Image 1 (spheres, rainbow, N blue to C red):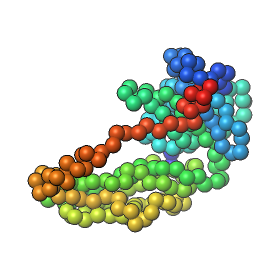
Image 2 (image 1 turned 90 degrees about the horizontal axis):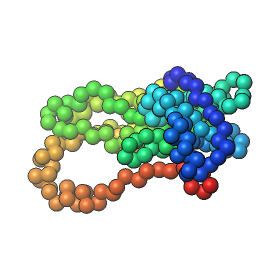
Image 3 (image 1 turned 60 degrees about the vertical axis):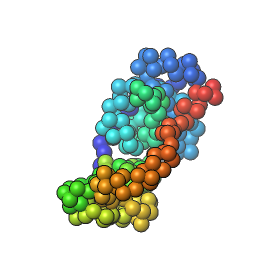
Length: 223
């Protein structure tokens, strides 16, 4: 279970791209807090605090305590739903935050980690993790850091489905269990030598990365 970190949220009085640039120059990241049946609130959060939390959570959803400006009550439970970054510098540009209840399950995505050294790799094969994160449902306090799969028994040509993941109690995986999770393929050089036209076709079909846009970014452009 992830440790709950505190994130201080100031209320944004100004919106739009120009205001967002000024905030970032001052070490603040624009964001939006929504959820729990309440109207979205435009906020700004300290870049250092947010970067620290994102690093701890490996960029994935994790439980945080939201402390709102002018509110002396207990931190509001929340999760980081989306982080937008500059595609070149990777600096955080905006963040989407969601209020949650500690007693109600939520859906989020967690990373997959392969454990062990596959037999097929010892034989010269290449381990390929086909699914890097899966959708899970659990209480906010039970979001796992990652889900692991033991690949030590995989030979060349072998594979494991999503259902082979080691899942802690209280966590339900919603990614189809029959989807292929990890496999060991023959050495790259053999594949390319045997079928170069296939490799060329795959390269031609490759598409550039698409950067997602969160609520905070959309809200800025509309302002």
